[in-house]
Image 1 (cartoon, rainbow, N blue to C red):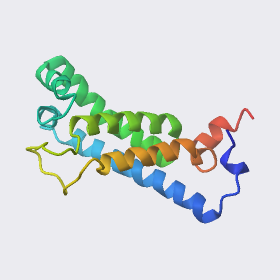
Image 2 (image 1 turned 180 degrees about the vertical axis):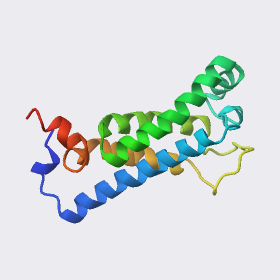
Image 3 (image 1 turned 120 degrees about the horizontal axis):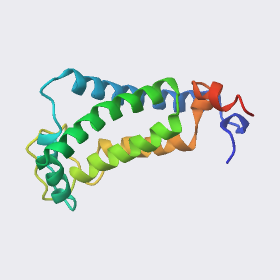
Image 4 (image 1 turned 60 degrees about the horizontal axis):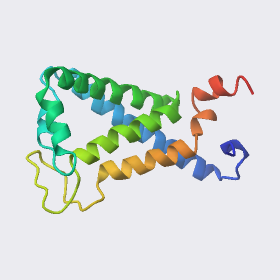
Length: 162
C-alpha cells in the first residue's frame, strides 16, 4: 500500500481527511464522556430496544448482569479511547477498526428497516442508511488513508523505524 505522503493529494484533500478523522474522534470521545459522567447510564435500554436479525443476542446481553456490565464498560471506555486515538492520531488505524466494529454493532442492534419500531427517539427517518452506517463508512476511509502517520502521534511511532 502506498503511503499517503507518496500520493499526489492536494492539501485540501489531505486536510479534509484529517478534519473527518478529528470530527469522528470528537463524536466518539464526547459520547463516551457523557456516558461515563452519567452514573445512571447503561446500555440496557438500548439493547432491550433492539430489533432485526440479532435482536435475541442483544436481549441476552441486556438480561445478563455480567455481560451488561461488560458492555457498559466497553461502550464507555471504547468510545473514549477510540475518540482520543482518532483525534490525536494515536493508533488511528486500530481505532478506526474498533470504531467500525462498535458502529457495526450499533447498526445491527437498531437496523433502519421497514417495520422496525423503536422506543428510543431517533433524529429522523432512515431506510437502510443511517448515521451509524455513514460514520462506519467514513472510518473505513480513514483506515485506508492513514493521515495520522503524517499529522498525528503515529508519525513519531511508526516513522521512527523507517
